[in-house]
Length: 473
Image (cartoon, rainbow, N blue to C red; front, side, top):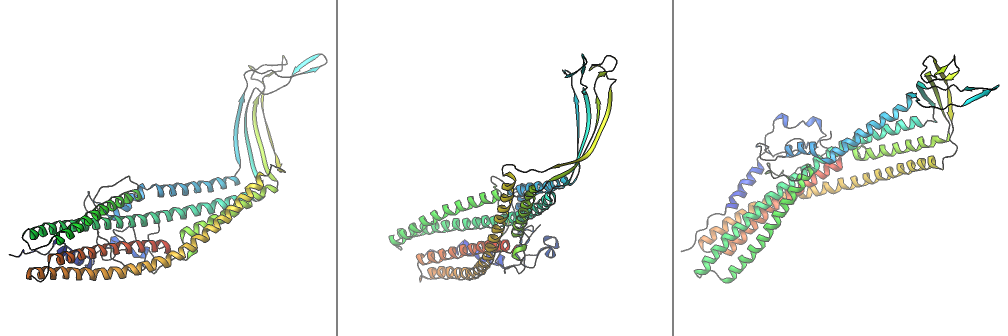
């Protein structure tokens, strides 16, 4: 009697999964704010952002959705934390540069307990020089002219602060895009691992069936050896898929600022979508613009360093209360005597002109000049790379979308092939080997859909980075 084979579980799962991919998800108004982003741009902060037709689920405290991963990454990522700290540092640098335009005040105090003062001889007598035992002074200075260095320093500090703010915002954008990419890669690796597990399970069932048919004389040893070889290959691929899943999860956890995370992933891979239409000009991209601002800041710093060729003029003043301990009756210095005290003050101008300092000022000027040139070259290189990336990832996205559509058709064809092979085996016109081949084709087609979705997601995210569009802060 011929063995009756039920339709494989994977075929049913494939039909269900493809139907699920085809049903568009319904989002509430709170899930996205299209007016806040350029046309066609992605919003990584929304659940499975920039993925129309998907409805990821973040429900359940024991699962990890994309929106949760993004929130944790922003709060824990050392990359973004460093960018924030650098932006704050440059902000305080601007405050420090502005302080050069304000007067400087200082307070000093002195009190001597043991002193041996010089004496002045006069007609056989000696008189101690009067010197304060105690004093309290207020000193002030206000730079009036410094060759323009203060203005250039303030300009450089402002440009560096603006560049740091742009780099902070760009770091946040890149972080969100990186987490999106790694989340999709981990989700795809999870699905491919499941397909690999199902493939091994199917081959193990086939091996048992072929062994039974061989015992009944209805299969050959060739059939048995063929299935064993395929099972060995499938188990090897299963190990590789599990390793890729583990490392993809580690990469996701690292992007989130964590050592590791074992929560199951919630959500589906997004189907490919059209390339974004909104794009910033190359010079307006935050990373390029930040480098251009740094180059301008370095030029101002070079001009500030060149001011050493001119003198510095300052307004200075001091007010002092003192106690000299001079005893008028005995004409001696007595620290215990507090009767002799008074105040004095002075006000005037001070000028200094450094004529030679070993070339240090000239070296600082040239150093800043070369730093400006390096920043300009770096900005130019970033522009060239962005222009290349825009074309490359746009083409890769179109290619991945075409592959995705082809693989979807292959899944339907492979499922129908499995169905016909099973019916043919039941009718005696097909062999178990042919059924196995059809099922393996179905597994490959299913894995091809997942791979195409992962490639399309990678292309879209990298294209958004190249365009400078998306969830910019």
